[in-house]
Length: 205
Image 1 (tube, rainbow, N blue to C red):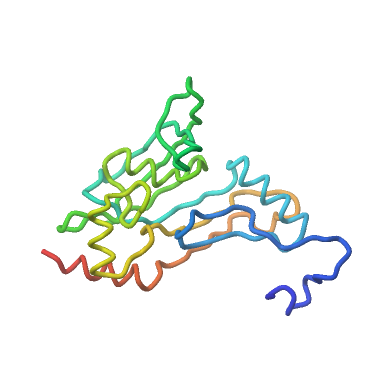
Image 2 (image 1 turned 90 degrees about the horizontal axis):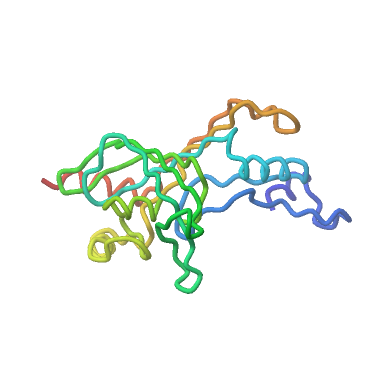
């Protein structure tokens, strides 16, 4: 509708192109989503997301426990189609390499950490599985989280989704139709509900 109102896209065009996202977020994850407004741009974006060498994505998340100040999580991941979940596996058994780099933004005395994580690979549910695997599940995660913690956060703060937000996106040096985006950075603040949660748990001694 935005592009239609600006007359940058005609839904009745014979080309059949529909502006579309070049990637996706997990259900109930907030934050930045990148769309292609025309076919050449979308094709280039899809290539960038597939190769992952010229883009940088970071997420902000709240996890149980106190994490290391900095760290890397390097666990291969494999999909369990029957359970519709992802788990840590081995390359020999079909798991795909998955690498997450993170640093702790803040720790809370009540037993939680606010973390910024960078995806070096883009596997399904990667952050959710990786942080659960190191004993720091994401708050509110209904698949891989601590269900007692989730229950408390829903009761106290009305949180019904994982505390996971796509907060930062950067394009590195890019050639071609998207060259004008080279070096550009995009930031998205946490939703109001999550900001209020952080303010509340900061007051807990």
